[in-house]
Length: 206
Length: 206
DNA sequence: ACCCGCATCCCCACTACTGGGGATTTTCGA
DNA sequence: TCGAAAATCCCCAGTAGTGGGGATGCGGGT
Picture (cartoon, rainbow over the protein chains, first blue to last red):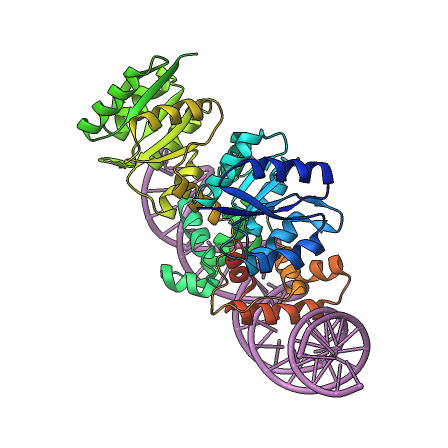
């Protein structure tokens, strides 16, 4: 089960080093090293590698953008980000673009090879810190105490609101008049400190 | 560096088995086994365990709800879901409730102990399949056949829309007229098959 | 018995949004 | 270079939403 790998990394030294590490693994081989996005977009698609190791900081654009473009052309290829950035923004954007793994550049050689094998077999190689950041995006930030609590009726209406229903439809659903719905909405807006239903829904959906 | 563990599991057999596995690890000890949510909510907080192993299917409620409640009382405690459910819904809800790990019940004993150590030291133990499902929630689902793709300008406007901005504000932000914004909105609604901005935002926020 | 919060309903004026129509210029790929 | 798609702007009629105001009745607690 041989794994073919493409590297996108602008720093020649690091690129060589990665290729070296990969070459030493019996089941892996590096098929190309690209120093910028343009080259990557041209050379990688026809090679159809199993895995692409992608740096984020590239001279002619972001590796995230590159991942996004390449993933559309190569849906079966796995993308492993390899970067110094460990902020939430970069991590999440990478995943959104289609990456399935995220390593920091301080990763040890043996861990890199392990990550390549892992991503190929359906795993999600990430450093523990990165994984924590990812799952934290799911967790509700500590409830803002500025938001006064809604009554049960108000919550019920907010729930329906967040399904995209019009006031008219909510009124029909709850068998009350539209005036009442709008009255509840006024109170909801006041408590959530928003001015439109869309803002209210956004807050509700976090 | 001893790790104290609480188990919430309604099935007596499985609970005992877990406790047994934990007892065999030199650095772990199980401080309590709870067979339902009510007991867990009463007995676990004063014990302040390092890790809680939580089943999802409990006789008097969901382990997800239990995690949510307990995590508020024990923010430093790590929650490891241990369940047969591997559908997206349960996984995501668990993470939202505050869980930091998610194992399936077919996990081997040695993997369980490894997961406990991992979650304690800031990692995110998950089976590869579960991890894939998690990161897939970030990835644009393969463009729904019915949903035509938005142009970059349309996406940009949808982005601002999802921040709760009025058409007027979007126009000012992008230095274009409100008519243009509304024109883009019409196209967005058509492509997303919605009739209001709130619905569009809901779809955009998934 | 009284008050207060909640839910209900109503009115009004104003603003914002929706959904038709059409028009022009710019951009970009075949 | 030609044409299609995108982005820009405009008008209009109708609908929906926002933000004031006030009113009634119900139930819980002091």
